[in-house]
Image (cartoon, rainbow, N blue to C red):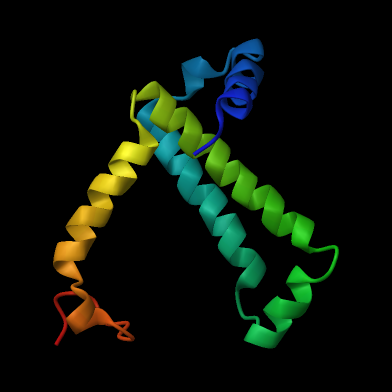
Length: 115
């Protein structure tokens, strides 16, 4: 997800503040949810045109900040659980390929268990 230099900077930021003690998996998962909700709140109740205008305005920085918060927290969680995020993403893609074969899912937004 993050390159080695950025991950090192993120981990150093946390270490210097002695926040590892607060960053247990459950707390990180909860914080990811909170930050993802803050990202969603930016878009809530906006039309597609309003979102387009927002993303072309200085307000885009709010979106960038919330995305960064999610990525930072997810990076802590992956690091602390010794997860190779690239490996787990590739593994999940294989599972999704089985659930969503192209011939059944192409251009279709239905979940795999819906008819």
